[in-house]
Length: 134
Image 1 (spheres, one colour):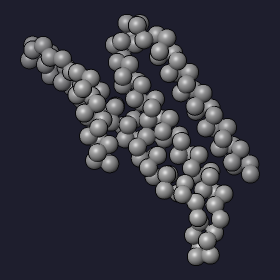
Image 2: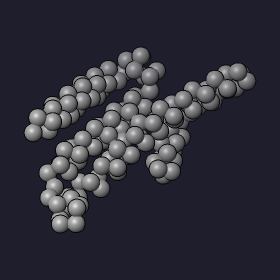
Image 3: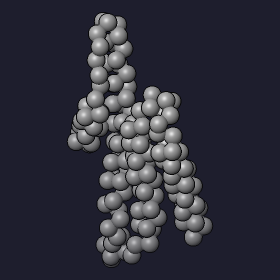
C-alpha cells in the first residue's frame, strides 16, 4: 500500500515538473533563447517523458490483478508496460538524436561554407524512423 502511494506521489511530481516546463516553454516560445533551443525538440522530449512516466501507472495497476489459477495475473495493464515505456523512450531518444543530427548537418555545411536548412519535416522523419525501428 505504501509503495503505491509513493508511486503516485512520484508520478504527480514528474507530471507537475513536466507541466511546468511545458507552460514555461509555451510562455517563452518567442524568446530568442527558446527559439535557438528549437521548441519542437523540447516539446518532443517532454512528450516522451510523459509517456514513459505513464508506465508507472500500468505497473501499479498490475499489482492489483487477480491470479487466474495458472500462476498468471489476469490484468491487461501488463501489455501496456513495454509499449508505454518503449514509445516514450523512442520519442525522447529520437528527438535528441534528430537534434544532434541537425547540429551535425549545420556544422558540416558551415565547414564547407554552404548554406543549408534543416527542416521540421526531417526532424519528424527521424523520430518516426526511430519509432518504426522499435
